[in-house]
Image (tube, rainbow over all chains, first blue to last red; front, side, top):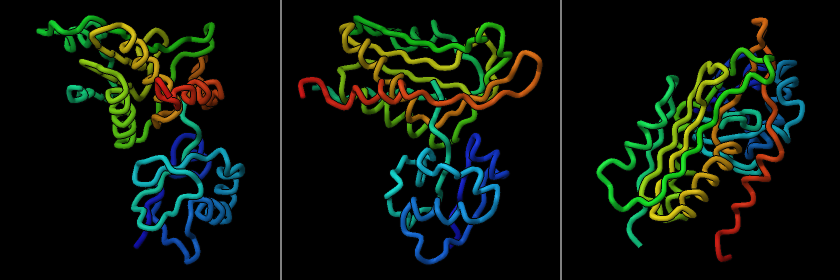
Length: 85
Length: 160
C-alpha cells in the first residue's frame, strides 16, 4: 500500500512538489529511517533534508517524534518548525 | 466541575471582526465575568514587508488547534473559547490570529489565552513567508527558540 508524503514550506520548495505517493522499501520502520531513505533519493531531497534533526513530522495529522514507528501511516507530513500565530 | 466548554476553532482566509467574536461568546450570558482577547497582527518590519503569506496544513491545522484549545478548556474553568487563524496573504496592519477566552474570573481567562498562543506558535502547522515592499519574494520566517521555551513553561500544571 503506498504512503502519501506531504511537504510544507521550504521542505516543499526544496523537494519541488507538494506531495507524492511512495512505496516504502522494507526496513523503513521509524520516522528517522524514512528521513534517511528519502534523503538518498536525489539532490532535491538531500537539500531539503540536509539537517534531519530540524524536520518536524506528523503522522495522520498528529505530531510525532523521529523515533516513532510509521507502520499503518496513511499520510506522513514533513515540514520545518512552525511559525504561525 | 461542569463539563468543559467546547471551543470554537476556525481556520479561514478572510479577516475576522474582533468585537463580533467577543459578542458571540458573551451574548445572552450572565455567568461570564472576564473576557481576555489576544489578536496578532501583521507588522511591516519598518517598511521592509508588503505582506506575509501563511501556508498551512489543511485538516491538521484545525485538528491541532482544537487539541490545544481542548486542553486549555480542561485546565481552566472557561465559559467560552474561540480561536481563529488566517491563512493566505495578510498585509501589514491586518489580523492574523485571534484568541478569545471567557471565564467567571480574570485569572483563568488570562492564563488560558496565554497558554493558547504559546502552544499555537510552536505546534499549529502554519508557516510564514515574507513578501518584500519591492514586490520580490522574501524568505521563510525562522522559528524562534523563545517560542518553544514559552510553550514549555506550561508543562507543569498548576499545583504540581
